Image (cartoon, rainbow over all chains, first blue to last red):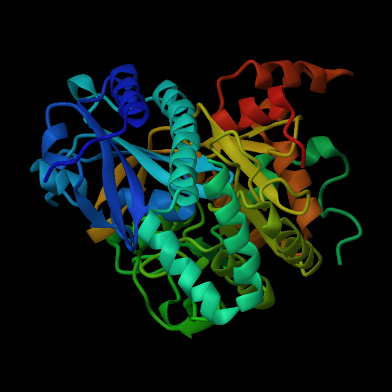
Length: 186
Length: 293
């Protein structure tokens, strides 16, 4: 799987991984009933960018649903295999830090970082730093989503206008007149 | 109704021994409003009333649907909270109110209905290590929490870990908890700068988790159930106490209050001690930046 991550989101994930001393990190945003990796940093980045995981399971799913950050360290003798994105990477994390990315619309993404250096646990300083960066990511995600919504493709716009013409000729006349005037003046 | 606290003539008589000495939580019902609880976890020792548990889902119209009966934990978080409560109040009975999991997507409507259900059922203590930052839900949560307060339910919430107002943790009718630096489960602190009123262990806490395992977790989510467990002990020993009295007992038995010098103005000393502690993001944000309620 491969995709192109956005520069701002990519920079935020890189800063979070570097600042917290993690090995890998990624940013997930909702896509339907799944979460998509939209930015990643670390040795496994190329393998997971664009990956889709279930939105209602795992640490990221909980953080997305609850809006609560989570910092966890499994026990060394925990026999369970990895889940979610870590299953794609192919190793069980020694430590996990998962922070919600919030905007005015609520939780719009999840920042997840794994494997703090030397087998250590993510500290409260790490939680604070990741939270600051996740906050910026939340704004960036909201801005990205808003931009994509306000610029429909021409075919999509034409379809909407046809539907409006059939459903409400009066409103269609007003909208069509405005569009025609703007296009002509441009 | 207790017109006086039995055996306590002054506030100085409110010691941990008076408050919960010898108590086990027997007779106290605790609701854990969360992601569900794995009742079979070996560290819960059968403390969950599985047949009385309820899962809240939302139908296509957004209306809450209540399904009574056993259910599991979708994430581990609810089991962790239940485990902490049980470790402090081993004979308290726990009921899981599942509001988070597959198909729910963390809807505030489900949180609200779960909390309202717990209040309607008259639970002695309700643990809500969850919240919503959506302001349109502030008033509905306010009303449910007020109802709970007046119906004698102690609602314990986790303060938000990040710099955003979260409901219902900001309301006076609940007991809002953030993290301190202690690893002693009975060592909690009073915060003189609300809305977060107490600080309890929430950093590197050993907690029960999915599939019968245990993990180490950090967050205010794990601080709140410490206060829930202690509140359950207090209520089992002093069932006549109402929420404001129980909160007073918690204040009086907080480590920084107990350890403060016994002379006039001692609370000003404890205030400095608490605010100089590295407690939690929520505490530092709320006290320094003055988040409005």
